[in-house]
Image (cartoon, rainbow, N blue to C red; front, side, top):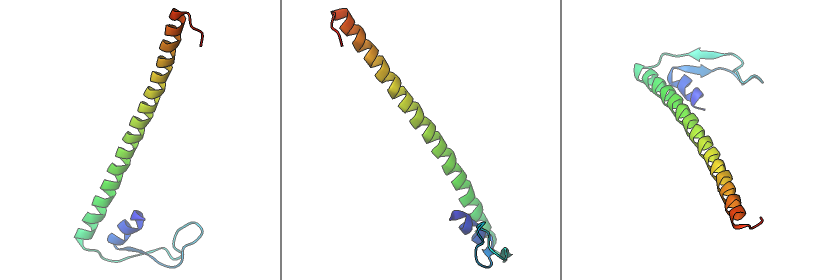
Length: 91
């Protein structure tokens, strides 16, 4: 969606119906756009790239935390088994 917005801000408009490939049948038509629109398009593109970078970092943190939680669970079970063994209890 924002890709279309960025193209429109830069003065590029789709011409004709969409083909199965997703491209417009007659391509794009270029219209002159004010400099501020190009600046806005550049800013949107930069913000989307930063957003994706932050999403990737958040995914990495979430993966790390889930692995850490799994490791803690394994360690807790091992401690519990060792405690039961020391007490002579069977699981």
